[in-house]
Length: 272
Image (cartoon, rainbow, N blue to C red; front, side):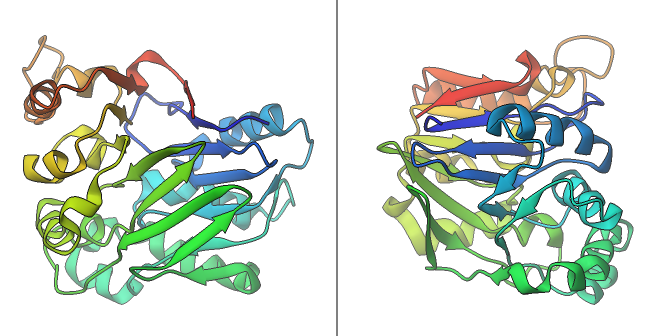
């Protein structure tokens, strides 16, 4: 296999995060995975990429516990069909009780995750800021993990931020990190955020502020962003919705970004 990132699109034209990473040393890695209804596509792509009927995943990394990031995994484990094998699951999630208190309507995915946890308890790895992991040629550095001080937008602000180094390139995964946690990330890491590529926070809108992207100074951006969100289209045309995608696109133009990988254009393959 080659050093690649595969960004998958949702079966529903909704925003979500789902990445498959392959390494030149034969590594197969998943980051997030999408909604429950994205499970069949994720499994199909894993089989296609690996050439295995039952793909063997070396590592599964989760950014945070929203439905559009962890529910495909929840469904795989819940179904219990042994459709894949995975060695390790990397995450740092606050308790379900914390989410139920501060973001009640969005707590269902983490409740299901913890309910399923006994089925893969021997594979979990709770990550913390400054942790580093090597997975068959890919290096993962954790620059931020959940801080319970953030009770507003608490699930997004509990995102684990990590940088992957593969094939001589650095890719910063921001998950859905919000403005508040983004400020802390910047204050802690500063110039250390510099990376070749960045996965745009919260699907490219209402995530971290411009100064975080300034510190990252990417040459390429990865947008988990369907067409309607890319154009901020409420069904009435360009920039008629309430989202901030157009503003964030302007930030990237200001930073001189030359390459954008966008989910609106379908599944993407990023060579590293």
